[in-house]
Length: 543
Picture 1 (cartoon, helix red, strand yellow):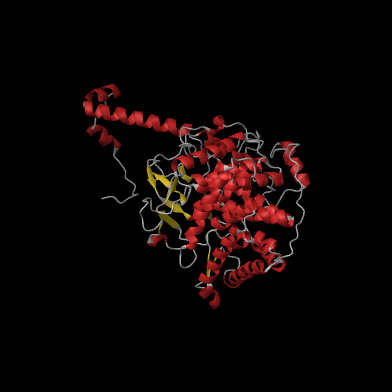
Picture 2 (picture 1 turned 90 degrees about the horizontal axis):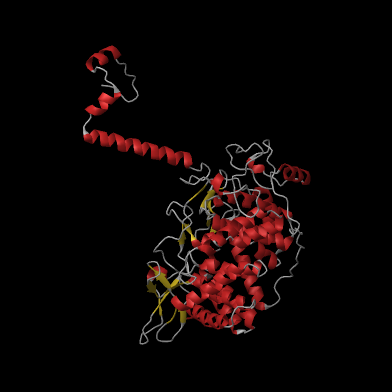
């Protein structure tokens, strides 16, 4: 007997005597029909596999798609191709593509990536390594803004609540992603100091200068982006890049922009797909993108809710790559077939198509697609017509397919369509309460006044999901009765009976007050804030 890997020697002369040699043709004719068919099929399979292999784009791993032929040179600012060839048309080592706008000296460690000096930038532009800024891309440094802090009793109460939360974070989770207040420990989701960075603009606006300076000092000494960690592209963009850019606009400190640019460069390989639809996750050190472990597709709301931040990064740096990456996604989704402007919640980075039979909802995984249509249109100076058209179409689709009234009181709510749009469900996530604020915002920029009427009714429904509960807090999901003789309009299932301190309703009330100047919305917001304070009182007394 032979073990695995043992060397086996053969007596070749003896084998020839046992098996006399025949010509290939005679051997072929001696085979049965079944054997001939089997060999023929095997050979065909081998040729097919070889053809697929040689046609494969080795950078994206997409069989049958040769990206070098599909996309023009990356220096064409009208389209994104993240292969970044250098002068010799070779990839630059195992660390992936060079980082746009950053020093690529091999002596500089990856964790020490720094912005280019003016001389280095001019040299890279000269040799074609990075694109030259267009004349209309004037990058001006923001002026530092000053805030004097709270000016009335209610503002003082809100700042006091923030100070308490920040004190708990500082003592028990400083430098980590999240505070776990009951156990007085921390949680790291991405290991990117999410709470600290996401809170920078709030701290600054509240006039908490000491807290802001302490957080900035910590980030300057401890915040690194070259970590071997898989992160979600969407969450990292809106929380980390958005937080850094907000801090930059408010304080004028270049440190925040440098970090935002570093992060933007690390996220860009996720967009290197045939249709520009990004992969959901990416490793910040290896720069390798991939789908999440639980799903092969990306989430529609995630791939369409990064454009504001990417466009702002382009405006702050003059580097078009970021805006182009986000815009390409929106432009592609504009071309896809929809249900009267409504989109399914999953889309494939591989083929650029929506997943058939997936849910249509304004809740989880669908919500901010619609929000960012309007806000992108506003951000681009109301010049990109397809964003406006898609937004108006989507609102019409909502009214046609998703808006219903509950029984017995007739509250307007937004349901969802399951099974690819054929099965209506009277279920509304708290996330849907972003919609009243978005509808109201649109009316400031020429959207139909009917949108404001819809916003007024929907924000009332969102408020009621709080007001009817004994805690004054809304559940994560509310179901609605459709029968006019029902005992109650609202149904809360046990699995949904929790509140995650989501901001959508409070934000919607702010927009409604800003647009209408109706102080009722201020009163409702104050009620919700008090509900949060009262429900957190037990934990607050312990910390």
